[in-house]
Length: 357
Ligand SMILES: NC(=O)c1ccc[n+]([C@@H]2O[C@H](COP(=O)([O-])OP(=O)(O)OC[C@H]3O[C@@H](n4cnc5c(N)ncnc54)[C@H](O)[C@@H]3O)[C@@H](O)[C@H]2O)c1
Image 1 (cartoon, rainbow, N blue to C red):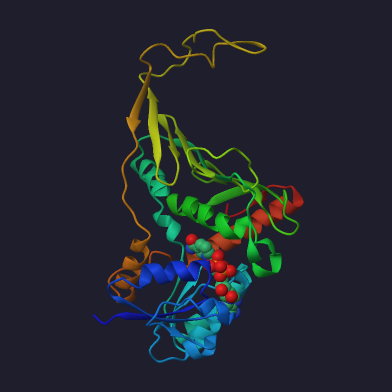
Image 2 (cartoon, protein in one colour):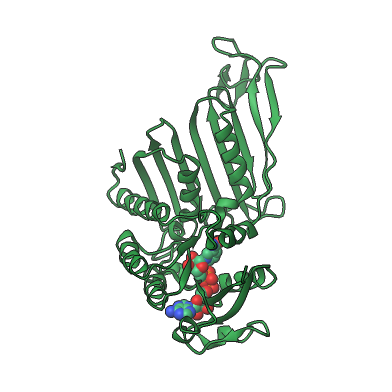
């Protein structure tokens, strides 16, 4: 099988990550980079081309696939240019600024008959895959709630991510991953309604906090919460907290960290109408929230999953030659964009929104 020859537009943060990952990867040949800012090309690895323009990269016959790793507001035009030149395309997330842009891009992609997918590699995050495996196995019985949260402890947002026009804000940056994960986990289940709160806590233009509640037709309430100004002292050498909680009628699971730690927790029998021990809180006693009787709480290890970021491109290689489907399908990314539009609408109006129900 011949190598898939990839040219990358944008040699910033993510462009460098792609360079590191793709250079040694078997079956892929990284051809070179273009960037609107020529200084960004100064440290392109020896042996790779440094194009003087995107057009030069796109029209280079050596390049078969264009990987777009430029700012979010550039994706629309760059995808269309690459498609018109007959190139296959991988685009960074979010694939577009809104559904209308994506539909516009898809017209050209379909006309030109090129392959098109999106780099939503966080479907391979181990914490997420652990949560998904627990959900898929039905080990918790009927799941009623799923919470996915990510908090940053230093308020840090940077560069174009703080400007609306460039596609900044945390909903676009991380929300797109967190929502994609929840939708993919509950494949096939429609969202009936949603309610969202979005804030610019310290940023002037863009959101740096959101809480999203989504009621699915399978009765599950999913909550996705993220804040970058959620200050705490560094914990365990990390400057963030990442958590999942899944609650079902046969147990709960908590999963902490991107390298997941956690437990499945059950009770030895149904503790309905079982008097708990009295315990004191500062202004009063409680039994419901007191300690359980000895031996009633049972824990199990969470499943071990091994996924790697590289698996995204391993899938890409197989899918490129028709051996399987691309991991990320465009209608899935369109659904996430539509959801983000509804989320913004709910946050703007303060009202819950009927979505797919
Ligand atoms: N999948 C992920 O985990 C992940 C992580 C980070 C960023 N991203 C995505 O990658 C993309 C780039 O983000 P980043 O953090 O690397 O930003 P960045 O600012 O570090 O890099 C972007 C680069 O693109 C260049 N650029 C901008 N417009 C261009 C154009 N029209 N033509 C050519 N070059 C252009 C900039 O000069 C810069 O070098 C965004 O879409 C972002 O959402 C994805």
